[in-house]
Image (cartoon, rainbow, N blue to C red; front, side, top):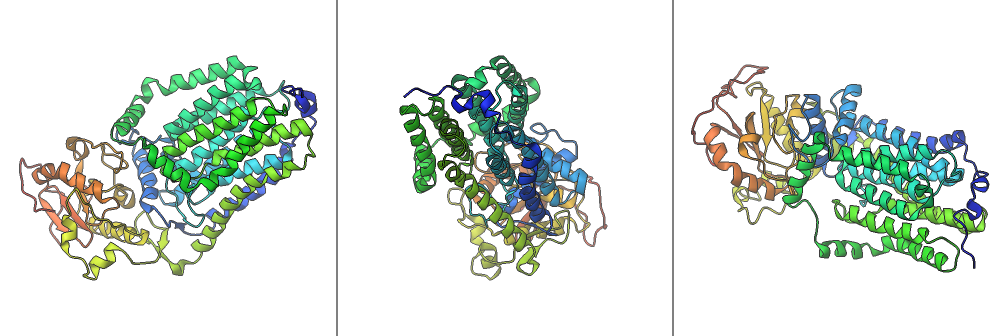
Length: 570
């Protein structure tokens, strides 16, 4: 059988007959996205069921930018600053509250809607195009991590949802040719270029995957090679920007994180994750086998199976470097690659075409279920524990009191839990409610009027207190401290610290123990005041605290820096 031309039914004139009206696409895709935005914004609370500290990490990063700090210079973090710039825009629009993060998510969803619409309307009939736009937009807005259950409400690691969505749009542009190949090619190049720039400033692994996809498309896709000079020029400019001097601090943070073990290179770990969720990847494998069969029978060009193999291989690379055990949203684009090939060969009435749209429909269903459940849960305030003070006001977590903190309060565990060795940290985890309880407790202490508004350092994964209290953040610390985070020199981290908080119940005990070991001598030498609460050991420099009853509203520090002052063990 003769191999169809890179046209077949796909000849430019024939393909352009199936024109997608921008107005119709905007209506069909816009209504579900507007409903999703309403579900997210209409509650008076911001709900977090899991990894609440990761949500505060985002707010803390934006708070650094609010005070004029430069990402990767004044604070260190291997994830790109676009994550925090979005929340900073939210601060400008609604003030420094948890709702600012939702504003940032809405900005991303708007940009994704526009980018996905430009890509899909040139390639797909109106209904598949609408499904693609809704899929990418709701992936951004979904209040749960990729790979988690839809009701595991969390705004942690939002850059992964954003990255998967942008990568999916890029893959559609690269591997599904436009219906009219003689017009609008510049739009695709510009669209893809903006996606790559955004991916670079989101997370480097998504940027690397995007460049790999572009390289593969140049090799196998005629519609990309037809405008090869433009693609090479844009790609070259983007790579030049990535390695330019103004990005050296960002690249250095990435290298330091890689040297500290942030790269997940255990083959056994990845194989176990893969086979634990093998049934979830089976449809993608079936898509690849189907494309190979079509190529072998002369029903599709070789670029179809090669594109699908590339999507799976490069997508698996991104997944391997994420803190998620499964989930491959970019794999949904395989359905659109097959849809395009079958429609070219057999026409738009081929009965298999509606079946392929089941895959994006299921992905949309998961996002919609998550948004609907979030909206319903956030409206039941009687089941929630709500923060009603500090700039964290409006954050809600499930009302519960279990785990280590409750056990300690009930006297079921002794103080020896606080003295576990570095080699065997406690194997307990705070619930979101317990975590919020501990940080509100510390914020209440620091805001009691005795403590000056100086720098705060926390020996835990995240430092939410400058944001919570509205105090200026200190320079030099890691925004996220934990697995894969480099240990910064004590002279840099504590140079502006008036107060150091050591959690008795850490969100990651191994890091807290390591920090106590690394920084203990420095703290004993430079901090003279020692206070304890149920959940915290608080160290302050001399002059950073006034005796009780204190001076309410104290705002400045007159810090003594003694050469050596003993601090009681903590």
